[in-house]
Amino acid sequence: MDSSILLTRLGLLDEQARLAFLLKYYYGFSYKKIAQYLPISERKAKQVIYSSLIIYTNNGKLVPIHHIEDVIKKEVSLLKSSLQLNQVTEKKTLHIETSKRSWRKSPVIILTLLVLFAGGSINQETLGKTRVSLGPDVYKIYKEGGVLQLGREIQQKGYTDIYTYPEIENNTLYVQFVTPESLENKEEVTVLIDSYLKERDLVYEIKYEEVNQVVDVELTEEQKAANKQMEMEQEIFEFVTSTPYYYMQSFGSDPSGDSTEIILSESIPEEEETKLKDGIKNIIKKYDLEWNFSIGKVGADVVQMENAIWGILPALGEAYMFGGKKYKVYDVYPTYEDNQLKFDIYTELAFTTEEDMAKNMETAKELKRSLQLFLKHEDIQSQFNYVSYVIKIYGDNRKEVEFDT
Image 1 (cartoon, rainbow, N blue to C red):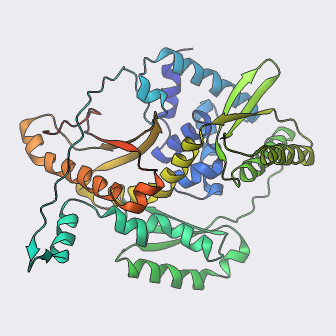
Image 2 (cartoon, rainbow, N blue to C red; image 1 turned 90 degrees about the vertical axis):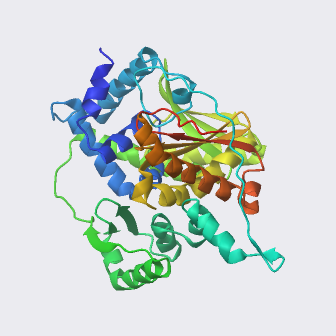
């Protein structure tokens, strides 16, 4: 099978569906993690992915979902082996490329703030303006919250069946009610949202969605089995992610069938690991299904960094993807490997001609400076255990922007 088939079929999907699809079948993300990444509700993530399967099969026929997944895994395996990808792709960046990229190492730019002194003391007002002029104030968003953090605020207030997701294109905030009971809290939640947005000078048009409609359709036995399997896997995921030692799940195949490796921090106590295994087995027994799994280990520092990354990711997305159209950022991707943090910021800024360079170089510098300022805060440094980091900005040609040293 030609590896281009997968890419061609994925090209038929819209951007949200394509991302959700790849996160599920290429990277093995759970529905919960996909929902956090996009961000949408878990139910919306499932709807998007199931709709995508019909397009992906290219014929619209109803077939058992595990048959489709088998085909997907084979195509992904072929895609991985046939495309000449370098280490950046192997580190699970969310951008599939068909040619080998070569990255040039650029020296870390030392940021120097020109602080004005008035009467022998630091002029804090001027310093504040200087920080703003260097790009988005990520730390302010991180501390005070933004539209991407609104969903978490609603959940923490006890409205667990209500979700929000913004669309920057039309400046709209969608509020989803997933149960009939959640609709009873519509007025209260609206007051909460209005207050939250007003305090942060965020302006969005609010639109409501009800996703609790029940469709009276008789399911086939295969569909019932697929739904049951999905419910079990979701319950297992929610169970294992409740532990601070959880890192990720990876999927593979062996002679006995598909298997899932649940990767945990090596610092997990033996009794906690035993409790986790027993809990998974109890869930499998409850559903009366088969589910092969094993336990893998990764360094405690890796788990700490993963948790820290997910903690700042909403603020980074808010600042760069929602914080100003002039930056033209479409992805912010932090990773941790070999005791170093790496922040890749992908933009649509052009740097092909001298005119492009003159127009966009300062904007790229603002992005980099603002992220450097954010990472220099003591509490952020502490979360990441004071490890070294590198920041890379990419232009519309997917090449790293080279700054003057």
